[in-house]
Structures are given as structure tokens and as C-alpha cells.
Length: 363
Ligand SMILES: NC(=O)c1ccc[n+]([C@@H]2O[C@H](COP(=O)([O-])OP(=O)(O)OC[C@H]3O[C@@H](n4cnc5c(N)ncnc54)[C@H](O)[C@@H]3O)[C@@H](O)[C@H]2O)c1
Image 1 (spheres, rainbow, N blue to C red):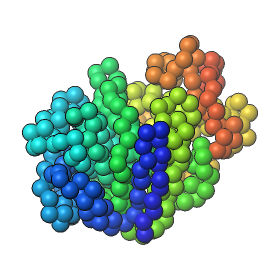
Image 2 (spheres, rainbow, N blue to C red):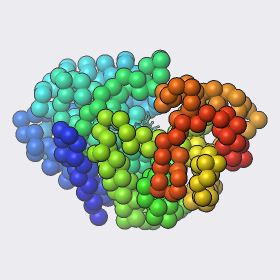
Image 3 (tube, rainbow, N blue to C red):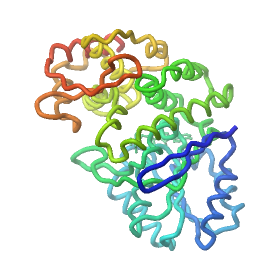
């Protein structure tokens, strides 16, 4: 099974494909588009550990020279040092303006490798090959690439659209359970802001190995999510308007991650709690919704932090310094109803504290 989603931006038109066992054919097709060039691969080290044979096999079959650089796992790889390491690797192995760069990994490798492809020789053809659920449904779509700076996350980068996104669920067979749950949070976010049946479709995540037990359903939900993100990005490529809806739950989540020193809580866990808090805040502005769509997935989240370790006051302060803040108020994506997101500036700390309380109850 293979699904194709066309993505149009102001300057670009390309496809994202989702399927099972599509990698080899996709690499062959990509290589044939650039007959005069070597092929360049930036690959997550864990992906290499589990899938090196299959990946190299596909590139060997193209009959073309190829060069591989491994990217160490973890957020710290989104650094200026590693970005320069990628540029050095590409230039020293003979990249040209017409050389395709294949970036294979999760969002970290995608953001770093995408930025290297965007910047070397002012941009070379980029192929995103996401290997985490989050990267398949979110980070590989939309053209944001970049690295972190000591002043904050994702502060250096470029909008750079790929030639193609290739999401092959075969790679997910080695993905740790917690990474599935991280991706699920972003999937549930699409359910909340755009497409209600996502909540039912996502129930397949309650099974142990959805890639084995329900491959077609998994491909379907991934392609639904790609479509949703693509639609939003098409309308707002450079993030001036509705792209902000993709931050549903994230204003709370960023504060939680910061309060936990980015250690005791993963991004996906924080987003899940953040969405619960955002639903509660929406209810305080009279939205007639209950969070059952989210709480039915609660068993998948395993927190290593307790509410006693967190301070309401600190969390609210952190939100004030989130980069999405305007004036003195904190700006949230709330829901008027399910699938009806709105941007709202909230002044009352009492209301925000009440919303936090709901998230705390889940800890
Ligand atoms: N560009 C965007 O629009 C965008 C959107 C959302 C998030 N992001 C970024 O994405 C990053 C998070 O991405 P992520 O959640 O994919 O994390 P990640 O890239 O760190 O991957 C998570 C873990 O899974 C491992 N891994 C990856 N694929 C695997 C596989 N198939 N089998 C086994 N292990 C595998 C990685 O080595 C890592 O340890 C953050 O840096 C975030 O800022 C970017």
C-alpha cells in the first residue's frame, strides 16, 4: 500500500509518499533524476544500527557512488558544530548544486540535515526520509529546517522545501515505544484542530506493534496527517497565520519541558498534558467539549515527574517568555469546539492556573 500526497507551496510542488516497503523503489527513482551525480546520505546513528543493510542495499542497487555520514542521536546534534560537520562532509565528498542529499532519521536528523542541504552551495536537492512517527506526520512536512542556539531551540535555520518526502513504515519496526507515543501526541493534535475521525483511527496505537498488526491503517493515518499539515502549510507557508494552530497544546508543553529541565518529560508527553490543559482553558471560555478523545490514550503516557515537583507560578512565568507571546498576555491556541481552533490572548492567571491543575491531575 502506498499513498501519495501532493504538496504545493508558492515556489514548489512535490509529493510526500507513505507506505510499506517503498524505500528501495523510491531511492531508485530519486537517483535516476540526478544521473550525473553521486548520492549523499545523512543518517541517524540508531537508524543505521537497525537498518544499515537494507539502506545500503537500496543505494548499491542504484549503481551509483554514495557517501554516508552518521548523525549522533539526540537534540544536542542540532548544533552549529554538527551543521558544519555536515557541510564539511558534503563539500569534501564532492557535492555539487545538483547532488541529491537523502536525510534519513527522526526530526533531529531531518532538521539538521535539511538545514545543511538548504545552505550548502545555497541549496541542493533534499529528500526527507523520516523514520519516527513524529517525523513522518510532522517535522518532515512544511519545509522548516534548522538548528538550536544557546539562546533557544530552532533559532537558526531556513524554510526549505524538499524534492520529496518518503515515509516507509518498515523503518518503524525498531522505534522505541516511547517514540511512538511522542508521535501520537502530534497525531491527536491534528484530531483536535482539524479532523475528528483521527481520534478513532489513532486507537491502533493502543496495540503493541501497529506497524505489524495494522500496516494499512498505519499508512492511512500517517497520510491523513501529512495531508492535514500540508494543507495548513500550503495556506501559510511562512507562518504568519493559521500555521499557528499547529501549536495547539504547545504553549503549555514548552513550559512543562522547561520546568522539567528537558529531562523528565519528553516533548510528546508534554504536548499530551498541554492539550489537556488547553481543552480545560477552552472550556473556561465556554467551549462545550470534554477531553475523552484524548484521555482514552492516557495509559500510553508514563510520567517520571510528580505534580509536587512543579510550581504553577514558574510554569506560568515560563509561558510568558515563550516566543509566541505578544504584549503582556499569553497567546494560546484554544478550541471553540473540536476542530475549531482559535487564537486567544489570555490575561487572567487564575484561569491559566485552573487549566494547569487539570494537567497536574494526570501526573
Ligand atoms: N521542522 C519541523 O517542522 C519540526 C516539527 C516538529 C518537531 N521538530 C523537531 O523534531 C525533533 C524531534 O524529532 P523526533 O521526535 O523524531 O526525535 P529524534 O530525531 O531525536 O528521534 C527520536 C529517537 O529515535 C531514534 N530513532 C529514529 N528513528 C528510529 C528508528 N526507525 N528506529 C529506532 N530508533 C530510531 C533516534 O536516534 C532518537 O534516539 C526536535 O528537534 C523538534 O524540534 C521539527
